[in-house]
Image (tube, rainbow, N blue to C red):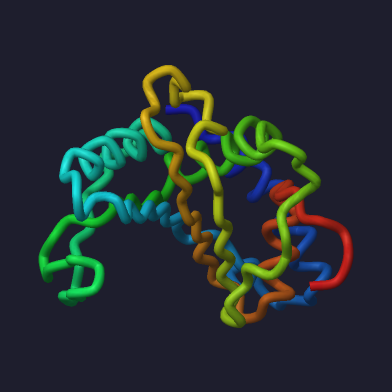
Length: 184
C-alpha cells in the first residue's frame, strides 16, 4: 500500500522543522496528529428517524470509513428527547484514512467554502487539540448536491500529542492548514 502524501510530508519535512523550532531533544517529542474525529449533530432527528441514517451514510461517504449513530445521554422534555434516541453520527479516523481525509479537507473541501478566507484560530482547546466547524456538508465533492435534502454542518476535531496550542498551531500550519493571518 502506498503511504499517504501528508504522512511522507510529516516524516520528511515537518518533524525536522518542528524539532528545530521548539528545540526538542528527540524526534519522539515532536507532536503528531493521533486522530481526527468528525461529529454531526442532527437536531431534526427527534421528529424523523431516517435523518440519522442519511447522516451516517453521508459521513461514511465523506470520510471513507463506516460512521456510527450517536444516542442521547439524557432525556430533555422541552426538546421531546428521550434517553437512548439516535440524534447524530460520528466517525473517528486514524492512520492512513486520517491523512487522506486531512489532505482532501485542506486541498479540495475548504477552498469550496463560499467567501473562504481561511479558518479561524479560535478552535484550540488549551491542550493542543483543534476543532473546526463546517457549515455545509456539500463542500465535500463526494456529496452530490442533487441528493441532499437538508444542508447540515459538522464538527471536525484534530487530536494531537502537542502540549500547548502554540505547538499544535505550528503542526497544523506545517501540514498546510489555511489559518487566517493575525491574532487568536
